[in-house]
Image (tube, rainbow, N blue to C red; front, side):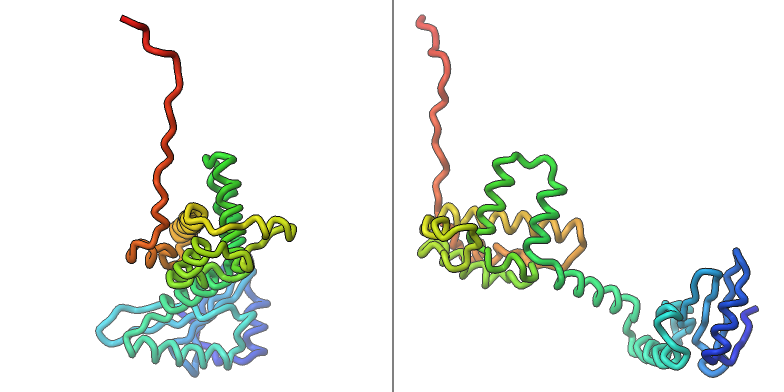
Length: 241
């Protein structure tokens, strides 16, 4: 049976100090009945243990006792109960919040690095082309969150790269490299396709909510209308009959 305790900071410290090796003990707060403390020799965590009318018992992690004081844990328990009563899932909201933070902290340079490191089957020429096209067309976004490259921003940058070259946004080593950048539908298309490949990979492997960066270009059919290359197949001539 769970032991009921009137938690104070001093009582919390004594319970943690008394935890025996190999044991995990749970205590219930005498003041806030739904608040539980689970203690082991190496950690202590606050939980909410509550049944909402018409639903099952729910156990929700509130946080570590290293981060939440007794008073703060009680306040967090009250907030979580209110959310459950409103039909909200605090655990799902917490996961969504962490995923959003992770998504918003990932830069384009980070994403490109992950893609190139983990896609071991890419040809060296493809790797170089992807890195060059993204650096040239989206260079000013390399150190910004990948999520900032929304479909409308990508469409505008694609148009600029096709018609004017987008020199100002390029991230290059020397001024002469910037002067070599010309308007190019082929390079504009290539940059967006490289970006789309990186975003798709990150979206699947890192479970991040990212938009299709090429969505507006595809929907409005604004690709550069670059024809396929035609190459002659050279080889030995057919023997004469």
